[in-house]
Length: 67
Image (cartoon, rainbow, N blue to C red; front, side, top):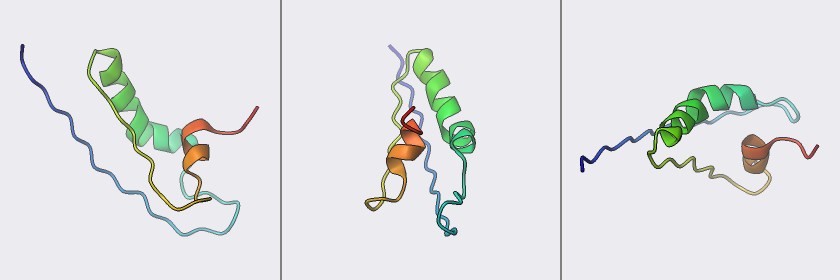
């Protein structure tokens, strides 16, 4: 069995006025999630880790609005 490794290190930082996000969910997905999801569907393990202070938008970025 061959061993493959995929490592992506990205850091998003932005200061913005309240209610005006620096990145949209779509943009975050295009930058990070699209490749990780594609590799996962090919059978590789994939992790997207959101880290930040309380109230900084981690859950919103990962899940969006409660519809």
